[in-house]
Image (cartoon, rainbow, N blue to C red; front, side, top):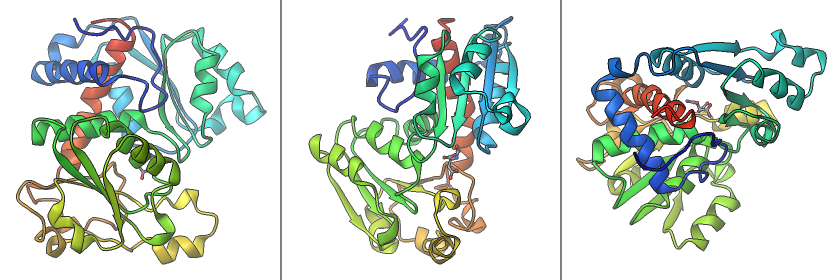
Length: 309
Ligand code: NCD
């Protein structure tokens, strides 16, 4: 059934071809239709969840995904309680955890750490976010949500708004979605938090259209998707800059009213101030639907990497 992803890692957003990730989406679609049919798929299988950085959705959705597939979960959400606090290296931690588990999910503040893990692992490694660099499974959740509202990922103008400099979800999303037909981008950020050069070079090299602006109101009418993001406080060098920039964009009902009928609003969450609560009930708000899809797409991903379907 479709491409075989058994024993693969997911470290970077471009690790899977479009065809391979579409196979993950179609399995996720099957799981959504009848999750009970998959509730014993991974009986006796163990996932290790190693979170060296705070998380609510990503960690809990991975753990819930594994439990809903009938598997078990070990791990930590605070590396201070592991031997890392005694100075253990990532390679030793991974070699140890491989002996206890069949698949490892890792979040780490240092960019590139999941790749180091993959080089020392005998089981598949999934990057659940490494510093400001990548967050490939959030992208899978984002794309599945877009597919469910717009039926396909083609012919879309995608707006990304907020902290485009440090936001790893945007970095992963843009390069991935840029592979689909006729997708263009509008990047909305203050000048201090613009999209990094490596993303722009990637878009230029691949002939993908984008423009940059600081004005959300002017750009929102052209968008089919608006991807809001939080200003990434933990990646700032000084608190004053964070305070000055944190409330640059607040999506409220008035701004949303400027959008076209087909717009959907996504946000990887957590939200701080950038979407006002009165927008939550609007049918265009898809961020809590996106949360649910995050779990289903991770169920599909885990099942595929373990070769269970
Ligand atoms: C994001 C992350 O960790 O990068 N959250 C998530 O995984 N859903 C976004 C963020 O923290 O702002």
